[in-house]
Image (tube, rainbow over all chains, first blue to last red; front, side):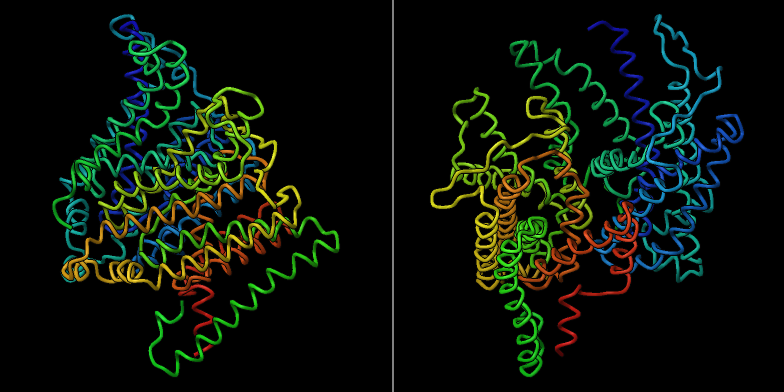
Length: 307
Length: 333
């Protein structure tokens, strides 16, 4: 294990971490404020990626594609909220789960009908497509670095939005006591819609950012959404701070585990045993971490104070 | 059964006769129709019937915790997968050597292994999940289900995500499991046994505690019941039954892949339970039947059958309460 490889994997872990945060922040917002479980959150991530792909080809520029895909994803989020989600807030969580499971099936099939079954790769402009040399002679893809920085900026923006704006005040008030906020004359329905659309945009943004690296593909959201669930469970459902810390933690542990677990195992067992068991253990690593954390703190690391 | 939700003697009588009559008719149909299908040489519909019965067992086991216990487990397909791999892995080693200890084609061994490992996994998962409530419970069961999925995806030796071909069916004395009709009746007999077992559990003192804890946990605790232990026991029983269904499923499909236990599969099991009505022991069988018929019907129109299916799912959640059993109840009223 040499140091620069560890640093590169650390940055890769950070990149996964900020993407997970973008997804988890929307999930935790909708849960914290509306008490709503949205399994279809990953579908918005997928939709964001596909919008970004199409608009990149249409405008000829990834940056324009991304900027235009944001309002498109917001519109999809609004439509979903108005047609389906809005009618479910008063229902129990089982109904949320079933209806949003239905939404996933619809989204996956519709996406396939519109964009075809193949994945679409998204080209990057040349200034983003290269590599940069960081201090310590570490060569790292420029775009991945942009994802990390962009993600951190969005995280900062969310912190400002939630803690220092009027909308953020309403969001926090809504999270601690919905009925009271409504009684004080705030249009709670509009607030819910706005929060849902915000969550949709954040998820879509994560999809747009990952699309040039992987590609936009059907069902891409269904894999990462489970990891995002693990993030908000570990962080404490409804907590923004918890989502941020847990996202980085899970991103780092998952990436590091996949890269270095076999080396670690070789220290204590035979090479052959390490090479068979390491992939299995690293695939389960974040779930084991979740289990351990829940065994100690059933409400996650940072449970919201009021609920 | 319907007794639980009965309000008065008069309503109770008519409702029991409607639901019970329907249940008896369905069970008789399940015993008779496959024989006719088989005699007519229609292997396809016998396959559907076998799948229906196996999935029914899984759905009935999920309903024990979901419908009666209020524990919304979103990782139940994991037990189906575990059960199927408990058939696949020993047969694999019986053919290719290695791991002499578990290499076997013996059906009793497969079933015992499937039930034991599923119960053990349910014990571990349940012990952690049941400390939490509500959304946490849903998401954690889902995450653990997905953990098993990724575990089998990472096991190169057993085919990873390509899956594992199960070369021969479990060998049971007196039953020719290779014969489709004989295998069907093995599954059908299992379904009857499981229905009876769950019926007895639900109506026992134990089952009353589980249902009481669903309705008002604080009250049950103040009555002196350790609800955690009761729930955990129910969770383990449900996992074990579903593991058994998995062993049957592995035998039936002769193939097992991690895809059979990803969270979409768990969602489908939940759909069967809810559609059939979570408040009756027999409901999930109706749910499974409707699910399979829908699947066949919709996929005969279009390869994109998930779209109408998804829309139906949303509409059912929005507009139909209590599933089909609920509808039957209301008809009988």
